[in-house]
Length: 167
Image (cartoon, rainbow, N blue to C red; front, top):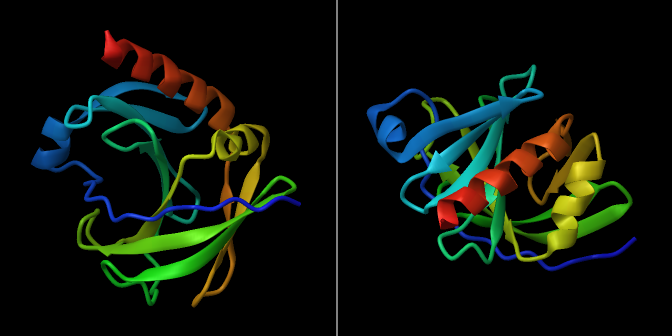
């Protein structure tokens, strides 16, 4: 197993059918349970899905496109607090990635809490594309598993979307 360093940063994305989302995110397409959106502020694209437990998973690029983010949000009660950084490990395939997550509350759909992890390691997304689950080991909470079904096609569609935003 390999370990890779993650960087963390709080991003203020809005999920759900709000006026801000309608202006900031434009639907680009959907594939295998994932939605792809154009982020008009960053001029890039993100993927998002909601699992059977109402957890929201997001992946996309930061403003400079040099770093990608993975966000997971839940309606379950958590100890996640806005701006609080905590250690996290992600098991994706046979690889463990260790780093920091920054908590968010109130910046996302009402009733959700969670956080984002940032990475500049392309291997993370190769692993995500080939894996069906990602196990998250937060420093202060219980481990949980995220369904990654369909991510290969969703990330391919997001790459196409990102290329079009550069033109």
